[in-house]
Amino acid sequence: MWAYLVGPVVLGCAALAYEYRLRRPDCIVLSETRSGVRVRRGPFYPRHFSVAVRRVTQSLQLTIDAAAAGNVELRVRLAGTAAPSAAHLAELVRVGGWQPDAGNRAAEELKVVLQGLVKEFTERQEIQSLTSQGILSHLNDKAGALAEKLGLEIISLSVQSFEPANPQIAEALRQQEHARILEQTEKLNQQARSAAAKARIQADEEIAVLENDLQLRKAGLQTAQLDLESRLARERLQEELERNRMRLQFEKEELEMLKDSPELLLLTPQAARLAEASQSLKNARTIVSISPQELSQGPDLLRIFHSLLQKVLDSYRDQSEKAARV
Image (cartoon, rainbow, N blue to C red; front, side, top):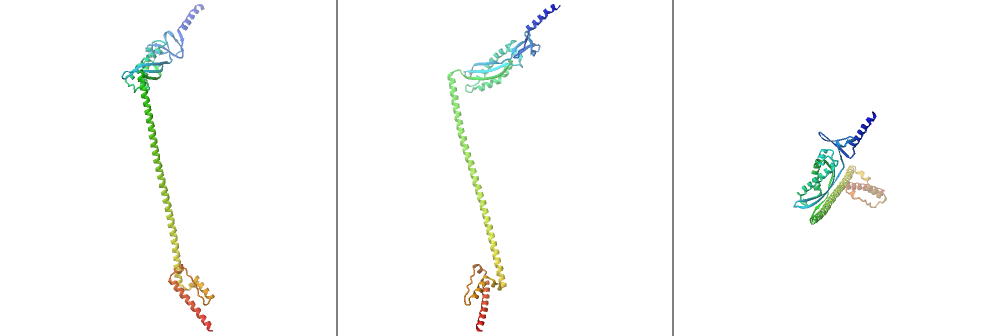
C-alpha cells in the first residue's frame, strides 16, 4: 500500500519544485486578477501564473540631434536613471509587456519621450537663449508625468552638454559668452569701485559729522566753564562788597560812638602816641600820622580830636606856668 503512495507523492513534489520559485528581493512578482495586476507578497510564486520583473535602475544615456529656432542644429546629451514604479504596475505591463524585462522596454520608451520633449523645447527657443538649466527645467516639468504613464519612476536626470552641430556657430557662441563674461566682470569691477567710492564718501561725511559734534561739545564745555568762572567771580565780588559794607558800617558806628563820647578819642592810638611824646619832651613837636583810612572818617572827627588836644595842651601849659611862678 505504501508503495502505491510513494509514487504520487514524489511526482507531486517534483511538480511543485518545477512550478514554484523562490522570490528574489530585487524582483516584483506580478499576477493577473480580474481587477488588474497585483503583487505577490509571499516567498514562493508559481512561475507559469506569474512574472518576476526586476526592480533595478536603468541607466539613460542619450545624444539627441535637435534644432533651435531658425533650423540651427544642436546636439544635446542627457544622462539619467529610472526604475519600475510599484505604484504604476499596470502601466508598466502595458508598455513593457508581460515579460521579466518589462522595465528595460519601458526605459527605451522613456528615451523616445525624452527626445521628443527636448526637440519640442529647442524648436521654440533662439540659440542664444538656450541654457542647460532651461532644458532641464522643461524636462522635469513634463517628464515626471510621462514617466508615470510608462510605469517608471525617474530617479535622476541631467543635461550633460548641448552645443551647435556647426563648429563655426559653436565658436561664435563661445566668443559671445566670453565677451559677455568680460563685460559682466567689468561691470562688477565698476560697481565695486563705485561702491568703494560711495563708502569712502559716506565715511568722510560721518567723520565730519562726528568732528562737528565734538567741536560743539567742546564749545558747550567751554561755555559751561566760562559760566562757572563768571559765577564764581560774581560771588567773590559780592562777598568783597559785603565785607566792605560791614567794614563801612563798623566805622560808621565807631564814628557815631566818638561823636557821642569824645573822651574816647584819648584811647585811640594817635592820642596815645601824642601823650607819650608830650611826657618825654617838653618843647618837642609830636608828629601824628593819620592814615588815609583814618582820614576818611570825616572832618568831624578831626575837629573833635583837634579841640580835645587843644584843651589838653592848654591845661598842660597852665600847669607849667603855675609851676614856674612858684
